[in-house]
Image (cartoon, rainbow, N blue to C red; front, side, top):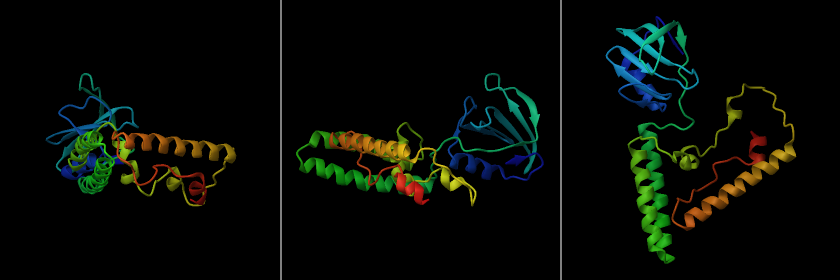
Length: 219
């Protein structure tokens, strides 16, 4: 949370915005973007539903105002704002490089397998397609399809349960139905991913991006 009168380092704020998934632009026009001009930092937290203009006086937050993205004019003064992340998946430079390295190893292995199986065309298509994703990961560029690498980005498969307070009570309204739906989801996902990998359209992931019903219960 950022509060008027708070001391904050401009560069640290910018690094935090970029590191949590905000996209830097010249002018903020949509949720998930930010812009910095001198002592003014504009950003648009999706959860707030409004763009925010932060003005610094040295390292002190001098003012916080909402502003209209169409006219760029400031409007209402506010005393605080919660800086929520703009997306479920976000990358840092270090994490992007680590994931890119893992994806490269998986790609090399799958390209070799496709070539041995007599599918050089599919192997080359896969190399080109995933190669572009690897470059984007290394450059920390958000792109459509980033969630395909969720299993590598978050191998621990975090869920809402990790955000509940200690001692929270969770009720399964219909556990049998929940198990059936989760099993079907995992099975359908595995089928689609296997078919795409066989055709050289996608990379075969080392594990499923979803928790099983038993894993959820164990948590």
